[in-house]
Length: 120
Image (cartoon, rainbow, N blue to C red):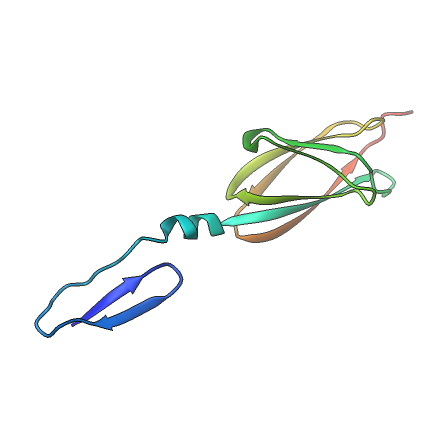
């Protein structure tokens, strides 16, 4: 019989003494595996004419995260846990926008948000 050790990264089999009928599964790294299920959100904020919006304010209330876009209209929000989030995007001279974003896999996700001018 073999001892099976599973640590969410590798599956290893180790020999047990003859006559042993046990299988051992270790969940020591469960937290490590859960933390890996995060994603970076790369947001690009533009005007309705396609111009990047500098200093757009982004808020994710459920995650208590705020950020501000850079000169190229970009902002990266690191390590969001799996789930759905509303992003509120505000920039002076533009109509505020709310976007629903779902984090469904680890890695990185790209989103482009276009704000409409409120100046007639």
